[in-house]
Image 1: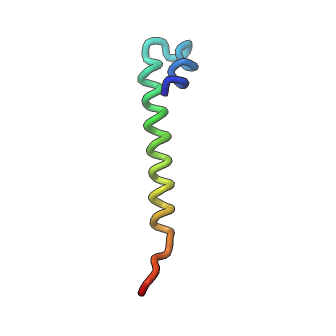
Image 2 (image 1 turned 90 degrees about the horizontal axis):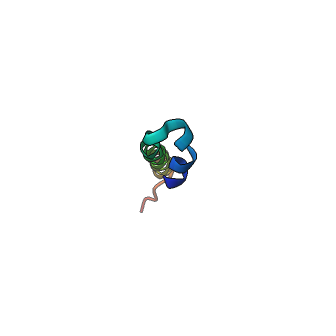
Image 3 (image 1 turned 90 degrees about the vertical axis):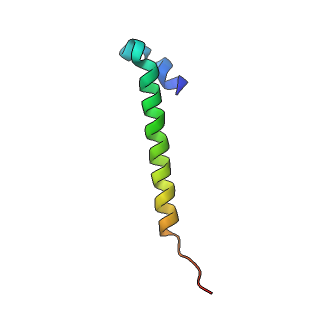
Length: 47
């Protein structure tokens, strides 16, 4: 989040921190979706 905000300060100005937060939440959501798809695709063992 801090790295994105620092690198986008010239583009977004005072809103760079919000942009960094948006990017980090998007990355976390994408990672959670990948984990959900992985969990749903794993076969379950039946006893």
